[in-house]
Length: 278
Ligand code: ADP
Ligand code: MG
Image 1 (cartoon, helix red, strand yellow):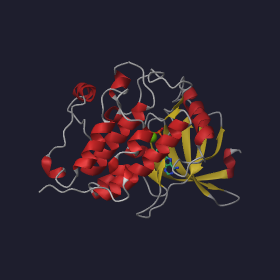
Image 2: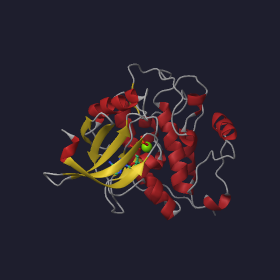
Image 3: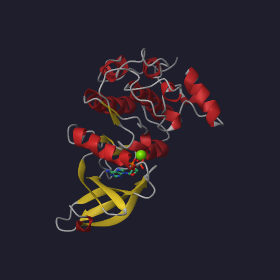
Image 4: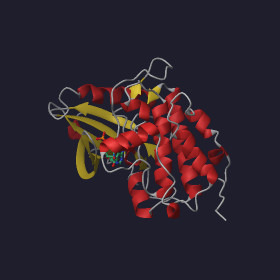
């Protein structure tokens, strides 16, 4: 479908390689989110976008919490990926405006995201860039569905080994230790990222923030984080902390799979445990 069938509107966001604009289909009036990737900027890395399309073709529309790729096309200058529009914005902005999430709400959200991650893993795809900027709310409603977006760094893997992928990529604060230790990595990196996201949801800041990237990498490699400052954690149960600890297991072979993490008692019970400190 040629791009002239769409009129682009306001900017919705931008990321590493793309800007995303609202797009209105000229004939049917439907609104979409159009990810516009400048080929010149992507020079030599165009395969990333082709990969994103290949992955989306495999899993888009197969789960209610994964963004739907509606259409794609290219011009000599740009590549266009047209998605169903998520009008509720990024989880990142909701966390920032709320400060943090209450534990019950956080558990419900994590359960939904992790169920979609399990679905992605079952299709032999590793996302590799899970973070609150890539998790979008379908609408502005408070209880809107959360959607996993941005499959730009994802990979289809052929084998079940834990070290099939080797490039160093991702967003530093969410990257699992094995990624930058060049040991090879696979699905467990997404469970690690879920641990970082859960920590962020409950505290309002991320666990491995340090003054320099070098210190941050060292902290991640050692799994060096704390549930501190205390005042941010007083209302967070031991069960929630245990869930985060499990996801942030440094050894990927010991880290729970998405399926296993979903069985954790923080997520397994409909009303998550809440044990305030005495
Ligand atoms: P990048 O690979 O450059 O990070 P993303 O796919 O993450 O690109 O898109 C960048 C930003 O655009 C997202 O963080 C989000 O704010 C916005 N965005 C992406 N897809 C949609 C969508 N379907 N609906 C609404 N906003 C979107
Ligand atoms: Mg992104």
